[in-house]
Image (tube, rainbow, N blue to C red; front, side):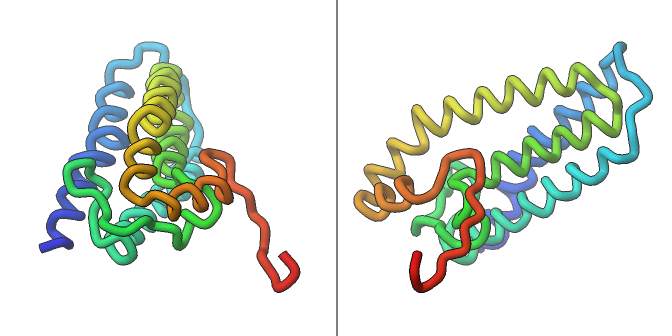
Length: 159
């Protein structure tokens, strides 16, 4: 049952915000240029990041990416070891790839607005809720892992 809920959440949320809406924006963008096939690189990287994060929510968190069915456990594995919001980073990379492929300045505008919305959601809703839900575990995690820009430090016995 959890798998069905995770799949439904994936189709509803990223499927809408990183799939259906961008297609509609591109179709209505009269300023579109030629685009570039190089856009496939960030698009695929973003998609891989997104799928990995959904998997980690499912496996480690025992929940979905949907706010109505969130993980039961704080997810600190995989890409969440490097940045607190890799799913949002993945969606933004995916959108950058779409925009580059299509040559769509309107889609870049949508991506910027979505990035602002993601930031506000994280700061005003998600982080306070995680603090209440996971307490000291969240506080320690938030203090050691950056919100948006990954830190790629390899931890060894001396670190």
